[in-house]
Length: 121
Image 1 (cartoon, rainbow, N blue to C red):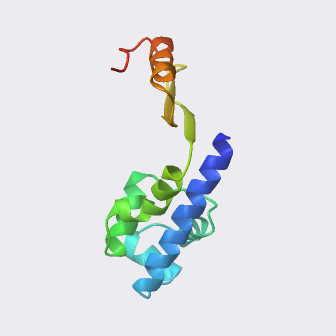
Image 2: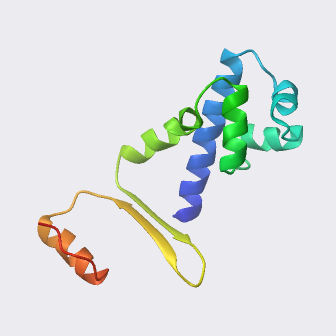
């Protein structure tokens, strides 16, 4: 499931990146020159083969005259359409869990108990 979500995120970013490049009439070579990001890496972003880190997101957004969050808006919109669960490895054998799902108050309280966090009112 995690790999599928990452693939969706890369595809949404690629579509938005290509759209923004079209709006400002910029090709991959020009974008690479404007950002300092190698053209082959820009190509990977455009083909959904890679997802840029925050630093490169900022560089891309500046070159495309938009905000970094504009490049991520498609992905965020896709995530809001239905249930969403993301489990991501962090450091020290810990994971980050993000969940968007409509549940009953009883279910929410049970989840909070499992997480050893204050219950929902």
